[in-house]
Length: 311
Length: 251
Image 1 (spheres, each protein chain N blue to C red):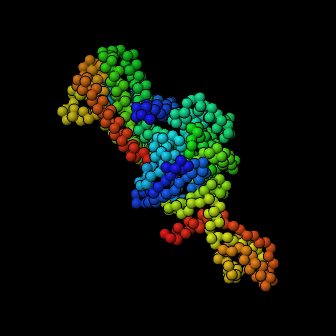
Image 2: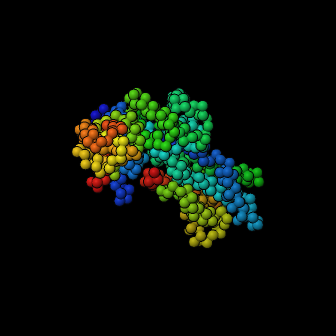
Image 3: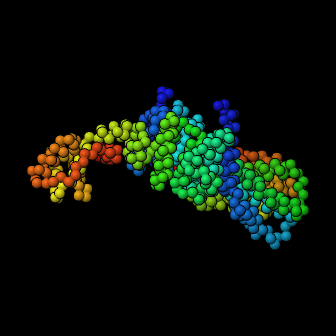
């Protein structure tokens, strides 16, 4: 295997009864890469992470983490995991949870203490380290779970929706930490619903839908490759019928957004000229006009909708 | 890593899991009090008014306390952790599923052993003498391990509802108490009753306890010890093998 590859997945599949939850997916994640794994609910994201972290056994295919078979003790030893909706032990203190994790990874006590202090300080938990976890807020619990995943100083980190439902400060803290870990060369596999988060953090993203990978690329390339998703947002001083705007050459679709219209096109430059001509010929005044490039969310929606149509 | 070193390392991690279990699940006042009170009251309800000797009562009481305490929490630890969403975190650590189950068994073993001191001390206070202390100690330790290994067998079905597992455990545990020579000596049971008694591991412990305290048992001590060893091995193999299949289905 190539030494530059941290995670290799080949034809990985998982059935739940008759349901094919993950359908023969294949991809690789490079060492030091921050890789986003996106998909709608029920697409197979969490099942994939669970197969890669050895919690769930794959029915077909294979996967490896730093050359070790996914799920093996060696693979788990080099991996840190923040599972979706995981909890720390509520009846233990934050510190005891952290030290428990360190012991389960076989980390020497002195090293564990040093790392524990540093991680809890970085995550703003140190003043509450001896409080029981049941007294922590949701954000504090999630920061603690991240500390628990990092206490073994893993080479590869799996995070399943780590910022979901968190307050802005906690989410920001976690995102900053992920960026700093990535800058230190850690490989990060991040599943998220948050397109902005994926766009800001990830080197590449994979989009999974109905158990199939529908796209893998850099977020910027995915956005730009979504043909027909460029748009022009325009508002006039008078009401204009959307049907009329849809007849302007180059317009693929029209969406009314309050007092504005979003016109989807493959060629925004030409459409701006057409709109200028249309407004002057119909005595309309353009109040505002913006050219919008497709967001990662647009790309995500387009790719997953395309998958739905094919199905 | 050589297999022996790996086993040693996983054993150390089992001890970490056992310590965690004891801190979280066993070191609670109500669990300890209930662990002693429940078998004591159940025992008293069947013995009061029967004018039984202390020598007869203490082996039975000890058997019940050991059996109920060593199987009290271990069946529900796994479904509890699955429900509390801590199991997935544990399973993603570098520990085998067997390591997790052995950890749960060790915690249950320690709890059973600790609580069994209560009837032993009570018996000594009431004037019983232990004729064969070494055999008695071996039997208590082996029985604690045997019953602790039985606990996770109850939690093999992959449900995350502790109440369901508790119901399954109760369906087995209560009849076992009545067929194991605790309330009626094996000698006084009809042939079919003795045949049924032999399928219960508690029978063999009660028999050794009676031998150690009353000076006479129904079966040879070696048979009792071998039977306890055989039941322990059976429970361990079944629990370790089947949890490997069902634990991932809890997630």
